Image 1 (tube, rainbow, N blue to C red):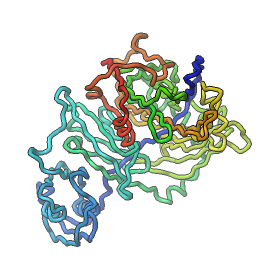
Image 2: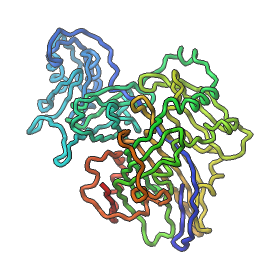
Image 3: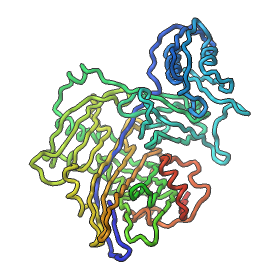
Image 4: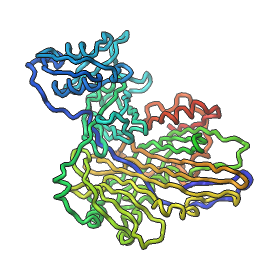
Length: 529
């Protein structure tokens, strides 16, 4: 929700419950490999002989060609390896892979470390690459950027997870991620995934030694499968709702999640808040009324001028955001009682991890005059499980939502909603699914009386489930529970210079980082650890 108020007016606001969302679950592949040549047998991948022809191209493309020929994957930080640098045409006949790499890269400071089929390229420093470990906590930190292998564009909202232990995070809008993992999990694999991409497992031990640029390949569904699977879209959606109790978590659990929200006026951040919460999550058969939230740690920045008479605040909060778990609180497009308000159409079949999902679009019927939704549901082809949803208020009717979105404003202010989008996705934990990522984006145009020009406001809120625990799960005490009605950005905290420590978060985007650096006002925080 959005709260608008004037400094001249301080009426008590109303609390309105609402349940919307937007997100992507993501299935990712580091590289798709086709074997072009056979190498001689050797204990070391770097010593194996390879035949490969490299054209006049970039190092990025050259490494892809070498990887295809050698049946291996390369991990590197683009700050160490300038992958846009050009290389000349060269042909190697049964040459050791290490020699091919050295002649291609032509940089004596770059060294190699192999783990399985993965080869780490890193710049030589005074010491060899070492595991990044906190001096005070027993954990390692892996970080990097996820890119589309074909377009070389960053991929937002990719899932990076150590699925064996229920740990995970997502990449931010710039494709950047950081994941902190206990050192005892060092021998585990990291699974990178994104909707529409192939899933890839990477050794945690190799990612722990450098910031990695990970290039993943889109996975395309054969046109025959799309044509053959002619289904009744509405029936598929109904089956997915019927399957909630079968495939989604049925026991109480703890979710440790990162939450953030922010408000921008035109291109300037007015406030930005972030926190780590522990969530007591009940079975998907019980709705969200019994779910609880405990604040672990939080901080915020503010850039408001005392001379400003208008402040825009986001009233969603962690409790309101979690109520957007659409399989616990069915919105009208998933509620059998109201599904007749919508048309449903299967538009595609897309890759989802190692299987396929129907992309089913829905939109309110033309004769329905209420401002409802349109969007896409992603439903597993074989088991009919709702995996993800992207939706928005009908753009043609979003202006009719002013009174529902705005809970407080001065009479001299005109507010026009321009866009309201939501996204949500789920991920598998053990043999059951649970919420993974929730995000909402709202855009408003606000005009104050006697002011010639209006302002555009952008608001967002986001939650990502970083860890799932099912052992010794108990309800929080009343004293521990975070008040759901609170406007999160209004909470007052004391600054903690060490801050996040071993807790997992979403990396701030570049524009957020720059905004934080420019804002000189107090950064406040709280720690309940």
